[in-house]
Length: 381
Image 1: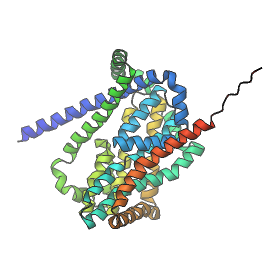
Image 2 (image 1 turned 120 degrees about the horizontal axis):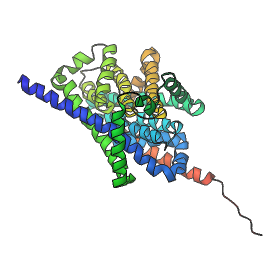
Image 3 (image 1 turned 180 degrees about the horizontal axis):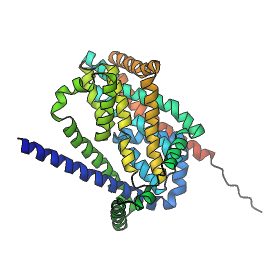
Image 4 (image 1 turned 90 degrees about the vertical axis):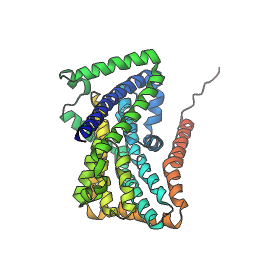
């Protein structure tokens, strides 16, 4: 039995290591493909992403469709590393991804619709993640748009630490990996073309993240699933710490935050402690972008640090300040009560907030920009 257990752990560990290597390869492949495609389209891409509101809703919509902020932020890191998108234009996409990732736990909460009490608690648990990220965006997005708040801090940290993607790695033994990744990427792009390579890279990123999440969940949780709530939710600091640790390792806040919805729905865990777990998960999820930024440019690493800073500042506000920490929980409970009375509200909220609103705003923002473009007037003699 012990031999089988060790073999199982070894197999899972090998799968995780291979998945991480393929993940890093996919980032390199994606960046190389984007650079090839973006050459003649650089100006168009810059125009589209120059509007921070469009960037925000692109991040939200794409993450809602993929149900993985890790995939969206990793693609954004690759785009910045390739030079297709500037750091300034990529930041709103990452902020939008933080809101979009909350859809998974909210969808999970809808599965309790047939049970009144459980449904109310499940919706409260699922939407507490939504309200935390929405409120953090409302606080930090205006600062970023007007003062480039997060960009300046992340760039300063990168500069102080002397982080410079490839140049710092050239002097270490790790450059062998990047050399192999670059060679493979060049070979694939030249053989298959940049568009097919881009699609392969995107699918590979998504698959690797899902594989890592799945296998690490089995290793971390495994047989302790029945005792999970007793171990993790003993007090608020333990709940926060476990949310951070499990999500850091599993690289999926969607997975870890969805885990607690059934626990809250069945009354095993209080919404306040569940929310503290969610705050920890929001810090833990930033590890994916940091891994994606390895061996990349300083701008790419700065973007990964922006992701970390955004969540860290949000946690400092809503975890350490007693009065403010109650606001997301209060709004989530309110949503739970409203949804129980009018069941359609929950589904309408998901459709409008995550799909209809961002799509509509992106569409109308683009239309407005086209209309505002200067028209050349030619005079005839």
